[in-house]
Image (cartoon, rainbow, N blue to C red; front, side):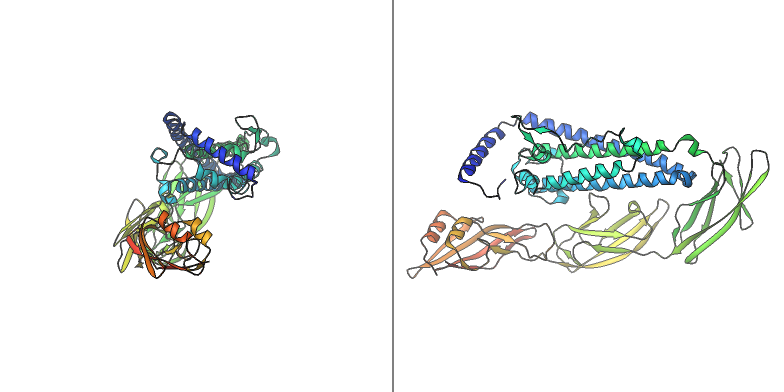
Length: 520
């Protein structure tokens, strides 16, 4: 809650409160923390089940839409919007959760995604998460919690508007952000302070996973309502249309084009007669499959007819025409942050091949490792220091494996950080600022877009007084009391050097530049 201007009395009260909460925190029992871990694990399982249940509803919905797009289509479009609204909000909640874990634990967000709550050391701490969620405000308005609440409220408004007026009142939205909420003393609180102020990380993670469950539940209720809006009479067809359902309209050269050809609402006991180019296709349960080798590239088309008997036994003919596109394989492999790979750090990489699902793509690398990120869409490359790395991408559709191409990248050493003290890397500095900072801080270059930290492990403090050189070694990044005393006794214009600064990084120690200071 630091950052806003406080009176001396407020500062004294805040200090007393911090001491009290620190003492109370010592009494958070192991059993309570374990309870959060168990409940969180249960909620994570529930979230998986809710998503699976919703996916089944979408599958039934899509099947009905394929049978009669004219009647089901408008409801199906709204269901797709509901899915996007839910997925977008859940992606944001997941990002907030992993950022909170990463900041509390001092790790990257990618590592936070794969770390179990049970294994998190800071799960019983609340100082970092309170600052993250509440920020420099007294009501959470400048923290992540306010942004989260705004996203939830917008989601509730948008998803309920997908329903007809009569169905909106029957939806149990949950996700209450209005309250009323009260603290242990009965005083009123807003949603942000009630759920995130001085709340331990284990509770934060559990609460955010519960929000995901609530979002999935609302999504399921809305999509079920939309599906139920298509009544039984909507599934009755008064016109028969030929349907061509290709596995894909985009086919790579050398692969096979495959499509299902059927009459909507056909009686499965009656096999229609499907003819393409004078050739009759075999049918099973009212469905014929058309396969043809994809030879020449470019737009390919075919047409034919379906003959089926009407209820009176008369043979009806339904013509159809369809097209598909054949192209040579294309591949895009690109690091998402730079045009090179940095050695000994996680490099995010985007790999895509036109027309190919993510699940059918695999990748190898000539040096180091490449694996899928936890989001299942991007990749993470980690390479040792060297000249170059070559990524080879393959496509496996369950029938065959084919090479999609290669991409070559240069490998660079992670750049050196620069050491700072009192927010400067050299030059004039106020004595009071220097005494207050006490620590050397390594900072990466501004154009280095990676979540990477170096740690100062040693340095040499050098000064001159009365013609004599004062030189003392330092361990870690903090100035010793003796060094502080030297600074305190320094006069205006006196020079101080911080030399031989060693920083520990992912590939070992680095020697950083000297900080030359002039005391003001």
